[in-house]
Length: 234
Image (cartoon, rainbow, N blue to C red):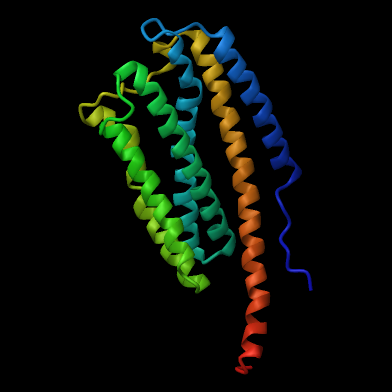
């Protein structure tokens, strides 16, 4: 009996390829075509990775929260798989935004790290969602694991709007979010291209990881009766 789950669709794979092409295009434009920022000079080019990573990190964690609510509401294994995949992809983007933020902070602020409210809330999200995955690995019962993971993901999502709004609510070294009206057109275009590139790649990785998780859970369903038989309980 074949219990394997089909992988991502051709459309999803197409999104991944498109994401790679857009990322190459946006990065080349950001490094060569876009003008340096007036005050920060060439170091400002790191924003073409940092800012799209931050945007998509918050978006993917929002996906994780949505899948967590779906999982709690329906008990759907598919929702649970997509929630886990979203958390993992979100953690990768979270780490990327912190690393690029530190690289940006050193020449602009003169330090690698400051307990600035934006940096601190971003670190909290990385630690918390990493903790969700660690907790998940310690729970054997599938239903209990899905429920506790979903509850923790919803709780952890409270930090996501804080990351976005904290620079508006509290005094911060980090600048308030820029808009297309406050940026040069030469900066806006490659940043938008990279934002869509990272989004498409995130969806691609998310779909593949969710498929792997569903296959793993399906394999557990096959193994469990065999273990029960070996123990003499059936």
